[in-house]
Amino acid sequence: MSADQVRADDLDQAAAVFTSVRPRLFGIAYRMLSSATEAEDLVQDVWLRWQTTDRTKVENPAAFLATTTTRLAINVLQSARSRRETYVGPWLPEPVDTSNDPYLGAERGEALEFAALMLMEKLTPNERAAYVLREAFDYPYGQIADILHSTEPAVRQLVSRARKAVTSDKRTPVDAEKQRELLTSFVAAARTGDMAALEKLFAPDVTSWSDGNGRKQVARKIVIGARRVAQFLQAMSWFWGGVTVEFATTNGQASAVLRQHDGTVYGLVTISASADGIDQVLWMVNPDKNTAIA
Image (cartoon, rainbow, N blue to C red):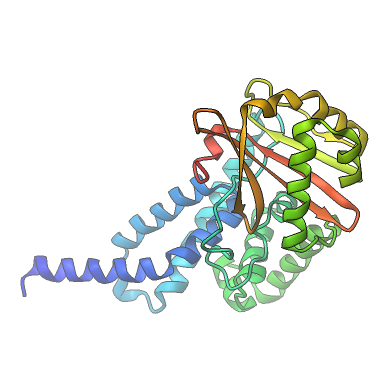
């Protein structure tokens, strides 16, 4: 066998190994960054690094690739936070289509829904990494310590702090069927600007977030309170006349895809809800973030 054939076979094997763990790598990167676009770029960077790595010295390729992904994600997250300081209006996670893969490469679905991703924004990069690896992928504390160049007791503290931060403000969500039912009722009431119907659906302290990064006719402040959110939606009831709605599954929950007359995606709206009613209305209408659903 020629040297070229040996190199080709070696690269084919490297590609096979990478492909087998790629869903997990993307799942880690997405939960770390809350951006499918940035996660895809990062996973591509991991692949390029894997090609040039001396793979004969790698005892556990899956662990090596997960470590590389996590460390790169920590670096990206640190720079991403500084970029978000110039973002116009509220910043929301970039939605991902989970209709075929509800867990997005994880053993469990933790840290995937929008509400969880938004709460994770409060964490330090290392806390977020430890939380994602433990809660979503069930990594042993010792392995997380190796990935983060830390100790097992320190990692246990990271996970504990992160868990408290993520769950302290989080209410017990309704099940998937009820969430879809509430979203359907919300869209119907919002279309007609029915304030009474909307207020009945809302928790008293409901918030409405609109992520448009400066897009025209998109709210740049969070609207708070059942009455104010209902008034806000009544005032924008004109919007629905030029929009068709189809339902999709993004981030493990029902969402409404908003299409314009020409079929292009204007954006996406979803809700989170508890026993008190809808507590968050999330409008993702930044065109750069809707490629996954377009």
